Length: 253
Image 1 (cartoon, rainbow, N blue to C red):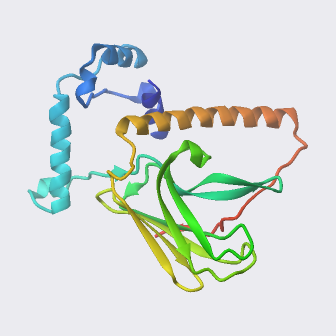
Image 2: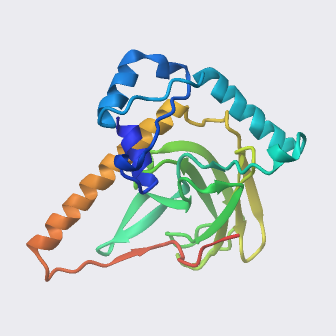
Image 3: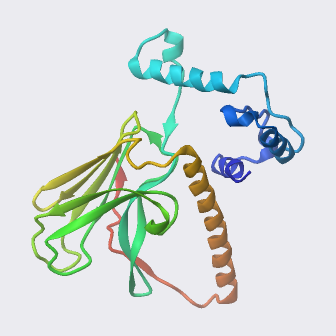
């Protein structure tokens, strides 16, 4: 029931606020799944008056009709939104207690952002006199990229040799209505740019893997918050500072 708990938490709802549970998808016919849901919702049985397979096909047909602009005005007036199932970001380095830590996840588009969506951030180099850099793209909720899903790589060369922190690179994420992700990296001094296109079939996770990763992230978040609470209560006089090689002036377009 971890995915169900994560869904309620993201919706900022308590299970007592749920009026009806509707099951969608063939696996919801499994009696054990229905039994677990009934127990989780304190005896409220799932609604079984809707064919789970027909519901999926009906929703897909509605989405296709809206995207093509065809169909009646009643269909066009319906509001259907799609969101990014996982956060999208890049590998970066962050500084913890004056120590540079590599392999950190810098989120550019947060999870559950409505699509189409476009967002950007600025990064720089971490070594002196670098003439090229690589932008690694990931999806996932963990703070370390090694625990997330690698999507692709952009190599941007032509950087002028300079001290670390001087070059400015703008990284833009653009997700269209079909869920296709386009990532670009632009040298802000020379306007040199490289791009990467990632489709839904190109290295993306399956729905089951997305649910698993989201559930693991919620578990990690809960454990991290508990650890921070214990640390704060044990020593109120200690302070810590955090800085990152990424500039903070990012915005959504």
